[in-house]
Image (tube, rainbow, N blue to C red; front, side, top):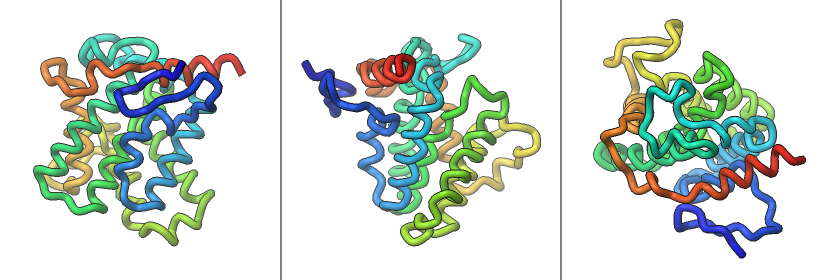
Length: 215
């Protein structure tokens, strides 16, 4: 029997599950092939070597984030879904172009890949993305260096004024894409804000965590 996931994905019992599979709905919304490939490579690597991402609740302390994203496993994944839904609406409200929308989607999918494992998780996530870019220079044939750099900046700055001290800057100095990524992450953490993803099925995230821990 196939498992359904957020009403958009199905995975058969014998189908291999990759980290990027969980985010197919959103990766498919990315227009640029180079950005799409980058996200897939990073999330597939995370799916192999970073089990806590798919297992962890959104809040390591349990004090923050709504109950729907503090479940385990899959709470952190649901937090990312919530942020992506909010980011989609903010991007539309600001009349973002395709590149700006791609940056927001990519950064939000990858922004918490090292949360709960590194205190400086935003910096570590940015480093992970940079390492992937350096290892795959053909990406520069598909997407500009400036766009890739903006994705990394959005990930590193996604905590806004709560970022690591060395990264902080005045909000007036944020780019619009940095601001949307930060606001999407922040609003996703607010219990009083609901999204269509609050009740999504987390079977794929749970299955991925289970597969990784039994290999």
